[in-house]
Length: 358
Image (cartoon, rainbow, N blue to C red; front, top):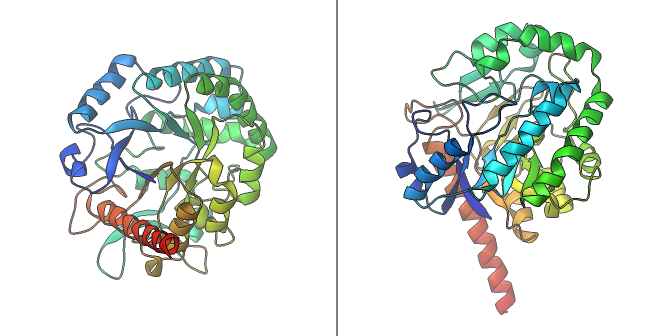
């Protein structure tokens, strides 16, 4: 397991590279050009500037999250080929700084959905919260106002994307899940050969949450969906970002089982916990198994048993000790999460070594 930390860039993150350097075992940054709109080519000079900053602290840039997929590609519009060519150019450019994994998603309009960015937990910390009944009964514009009421731009909720929100919803009225699957396959047929040429693994992120929101189609939601997705191509670049929190919001998803089944196709692991309520609500918690509904201990065990050598990050964290940060992406709880994951990993490693010596 190769530990990484998501970083939003200079002057765009409350966490500094000097602070990340002090977290044990973190060897690389999960990065992106967040100011670049979906569909734009990522300029080589801007990518090289990120490398210059990372090199000062000895971090690699092996994992990119995300080169966003333009909405016209998801919708299958005639203009998609132009944006697919731009995507190919961006893949070639990030390869120049050693990128090995590019995480992406194929969620219509919204990359993720929450109704409260600072819901208070019993211990006084706050975390991202999803209230199902509110989503079922609210207008998307009301949710947009809540999510964007932050000093930081939120990934997946960029201003340029939200300017055309009304048009996007209208466009998806004619797109069902099968059409979305078809548009995803078209995209993959075009970009996977370039990913192979550049030795990059394209790793799709599951839908968050893993069910339809505002009647928009969602397709990467379950073990069966992952099986269908991975069957599209046997390319070594055709891979998965396994997010335990996204898939785990549906208690029917057996995350350790999915890891054990598809471990050789998982290029990137997002490891986090959520507490699920009977009414369909969920809140993000600490990484301890006891604090949520997801078997974090067995998840790490599954990665260890299958010899996982891919990249991992702790994903979202709570907001602790009055930290002012991007919602879900502060320093303290993600650092605690990393240490918990390392603790589990080290314990399984010790058990393995003890068994081998006996």
